[in-house]
Every structure is written in C-alpha cells, then in structure tokens.
Image (tube, rainbow over all chains, first blue to last red):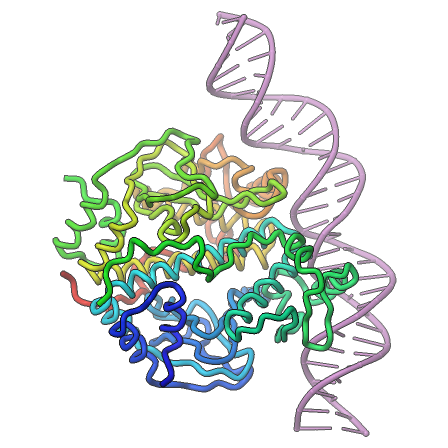
Length: 248
Length: 248
DNA sequence: CGAAGACTTGATGCCGATCAACAGGGGTGG
DNA sequence: CCACCCCTGTTGATCGGCATCAAGTCTTCG
C-alpha cells in the first residue's frame, strides 16, 4: 500500500484520521512520469489541473521580457505544483523536471470537494500556504538585501535541507543536481559569478565539491555566511495547529 | 450596517451567500485603531491572533542581521495581516501602520471554525493565498532580474493600483505616502538611488511629483519601463472559481 | 571522435552603494 | 513665538560588487 505523498507531507504536521488519509489517497490515483528536462506546464498556457510531486525534483520559473529567467521555486516529493492554476486560467509560471519525475494530476474540483468533506484538510492547506509564503518572503529578503555569497550559501543550505527531508539522508554530502546557471537564475546572479562564489566558499573551507556532489565542510560558518534565519521549514517545533477544527 | 471588509474583498471574487456574509461579519466584531507609525506586531513576538485591515495602510517587513530592512508587503483595506500567525507561534515579520489605521483582531480558532462551517470560504481563502503568492513571485522576479528604474516604476504602479481599488479614485494622481527610504527598502535599493531613479522618471516625462503627491504623466511608458506583467491582481477577468464547493 | 554543454578564470566596465554636504519643513521645548 | 533639531529630500564624488566579454578546459553523449 502506497500512501499518498500529500498525506505523507500533511501527516508530518498533524496526525491525520483514516478518513482524511483515504480522501488524500483518492486524489493521487493517476500518475504521470516525466523525463529529465520535460515541461509539465508552460507559462501562459491553460492549466486545468494541479499536480502533486511523487518522485524526483522539479523547478518553476518565469521568463522576463528581456529573456532572463527567474527561478521561483524548487519542488520535491509531496509539494503541490500549480496551485495557482486554481484561480488563474493561465499558468503564471513554467514548471519543468530537473530529474526523472512522477507527478499525480489532481482535478481543480477535487480541492473544492476536499474542503467540503474535510474542513480540517482545507484549513491545513491554508496553513501549508502560509509556511510557503514565509519561505518566499525569506527569499525576497535575500534577493533584496544580501550579497552574492550569502545568496549562494543560502541556496545550498535550502536545497540540502529539503533533500534531507525527502530522502532521509543525514550526511553532509549530497547531489546538488543544479547547473551553475540554474543557481544563478534562482539567486539573481550570473553563472560566472556563481562560479566565483562557489570557489570562494570552497577556498574558505566551507564546502567541498566533486563533480556534482557537494559537501558541507564547515556548516556553522556556511550558515553564518548565508545569514540563514533558521526557520527550519517543516519541523513541527514552533508550529501550532491547535486552532484546526475537528477531523472527519 | 457596515459589511465586513473581508466580505467586501471576497465578494469581489464571487457572490457570497447571506450565511457566508454573516459569518465573515462576525469575525470583525472588535476594532482597534492605530496611529501612524504604531507597531501592530513585532518580529519574533508571540502572535496569538490575526487581523483584518479595516481602514488605512500598513506595511510588513523583516530586519536582517546586518540591520538592513526588507519591506515585504503593503497592506490595504480588506487584507489579512499575520496569517502566518496561524502556524508560527512567533511572528516572522513586523507590521506597522503607515497611516492612521483600524484593524479587526480575529482569533486563530475562528479560521478553524470558519472552514468547518463554510467550506467554500475556506477554499476561497486558499484561492486568495494563491493570488498573493503570485504577486510575491512577481516581486521576486523583479528583485532578482530587473534594473533599479524598473523596480521603482513597478512599485509606483503597484501602489497606485491598490489605492485605486481601495478608494475608488480613477485619476492619475495619488498620495504615495511612502518616504524614499521606504521605497528603497521595498525594492532593495538605497534611498539615495531611489531619489535618482524618481528624478530620472520625472525628467523622462513619465511621472510628475509635488510634495507627497504623485502623478502618472505617461503611464504607457511607465508600464513599459517597469516590465509590468499586467496581472491586474484583483480583477475577476482571467480568474476561475468554478471549482469551489457549494455555499452554505 | 566530434560537438555541445558545463565549468573555469582573467580583463574590463557599469550600475548602484557609499560618503558627504546642504536645503526645506514640521514638530517640540524653551 | 521662536530656535532648534530631526527627518526627508536632493545632488555631487568616489568606490566596489557583480555583469559582461572573452578564451580555454573538461565532461558527456551521440
């Protein structure tokens, strides 16, 4: 029995009832696989459905009038993709697969019936939105007010933390899975300057690199360099769900 | 009879039932007034409740370790403040009044009971979150990938559009109500450079300034300068709410 | 084995930060 | 009522971080 990825994600926040688990499972009946580089959704295209990431990692971005790209978000197992498709007929962003991926398409209407049948899950979705909103504002502050080195360091830490949650690896080494150009498009820098910042972090003994693999040598220093507000996105400590209505 | 500000806001998106309106009204029983500059909520402080803005304009920001400030959001009538307080015990941001303000405190638990009693409203709150998320990602792309001039122009357009919705003024002149330092903290620039950008926009005939009043002289050009993705945040065109469950 | 993409490093230039000085204005206390 | 001061705005001079341009290496894959 494969539990739904969404149930897995929400289950980290609160204990779900069996009814709720079943409702979430039923959302992820279908599955669609994507190969590396495949486009799930294109900016401005119609987006009649949303998706839950089941395997692999993806990213979403926008292209500005001058052709430059801003990466908005990296997506991992359990993340909801294209929630904006709920309200906007046309997708505000492009979503592509960074690795081999599997996603579960979800009808828009399913979110409506879900909130009717399971008010607590609807409230929980609101809560998850807030967590993601805070993550976005953290990035906003980073782009607006921190140096190139801090931004690159912060991105590395972010990716590592998310990978850690997904595949449970506890070590200090991980597969970054991003080109330097992608790091630049996420942090508002050029690929060239990203390269220099990585070299600098390496020369200063904070990280080590070997091909695509990244190792945190001095994590304390790296965190300090990143000005990382250790919000520890998904950890239950510091979160409060006492206001949720009863389960069904 | 004063309708609730939240009902007003949500009512722009869909037609609310009388039950729903009543439920929203009941959220805004209490009212608290704030004078210009007053702090509603301080970063890291406990935030046991949320608020709806009833009158005036506010802003939220964070202070980074080096003392610099990033303004995250400007808040107008009908906006929800401190929704993050739903999940985070401690507020992730500071919220202060830019003008004389009135807010209605709302218990966290009220959101829970609201979603239990009125599933459609819960779904609508999810939808509103998505609209705001898209606005945030637009700003993210602006900070990461556009010039100082474009960012200032975009901010001016944004503020004007929001003021227009709130007070229904249709003209091209409005009270900006922000210092140049605040514009800088919102756009990731210094006050000095904001000043130069405003002068440049003025010299190029896009805007005119008179004390605190701002006039759009050549709006077309201003919009082009801002690379403004005319998402027109609250306009119902392009939005889709057919997936919502039935009203109660 | 050739070609295309990713990475690396150097040289140079520009956008926006920083430092500095001054003007206007509104609030406060003497 | 006036003097003072702090806040905001304005403009010039200089500096520095990151972009841009360029050239070359390494890797991967057809």
